[in-house]
Length: 421
Image (cartoon, rainbow, N blue to C red; front, side, top):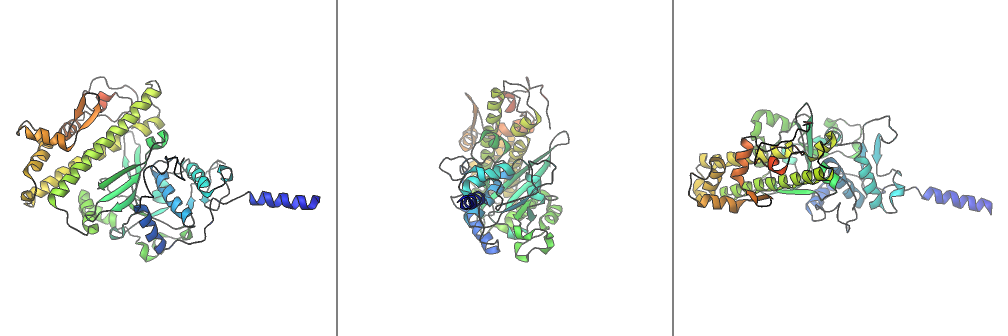
């Protein structure tokens, strides 16, 4: 009887250890196509980590974690393998390899979904966009770019620091524009839904290991990039195109990916909408920082807090989106396409850059109708105000500044707290 009890105890103990999920399929180009289609569906949405109705509620993801999470979720739901090769570290809290077969997260719950949530949250403590760009993805040929792939960038901030970010490509329009879904450090810290942008064009040029990337498969561990299957489209083409075309690189990408020609007026209206979207997102980011500043009693923020709530990259994205609109407006004129655009739209865009006092009063009304940002009670700005303040360096990215300083109402009263970068 004691022997039987011992055997049952051992069997129970053994069965208590579970993989995050079991894999019975293997990654292939067919599965990549299914992954691409899945990313485009409503199953992938901004609230999938924050809605209590979601099986993946509780994932606390910044930009890299969100990308890993989407890949892991599809892998779980289709019995595919998932593996991450994390940096070596002497700490017992970190790991060298993490896969769906680990039993490290048994205590997280009795379902694969709960264990996946725990795994992604654990993963986020040790790896980020550097690892995502250098280890688990490879650069891809432009005409192979598809939903489910990534765009990552790394730009210089101040004081020798760098700003990094990653977008998951959710869809690509017939005109070669991107629909992206992503998270940020501030979103992760405040447990907010992910962000999504439509009709988006990237602005930070690929370089090094940064740019358009596709996932490697767990079975490709140890392979050099040039040993990957040809159909995966591994290529350094994008970096050569950047050297050749400079900032026009993204126009080349758009031309390679589009299947239809966008009408000039539709294109300009979309670019205005995109600039407005960037401005609205900036308002969201700034308000997150202001809320956190109040929460901590207005003290100066640490490097980690500054990194989460400052907005240098967001401000640069806003500026570059305005500059892109300006370039597109000038190209419409250069190519003699102005007759295809409503004159009031052309005047309104000109008013963004030249000011509207020179024009008839309707230009101001049109600008206000196109985009208005109410960033605090009783105060609103249109795209001319935003362009004017950005071009004069009046807006600040420092999260310890007040709202008037953040939006460039005044340069007086700016914070004396350290600017970490």
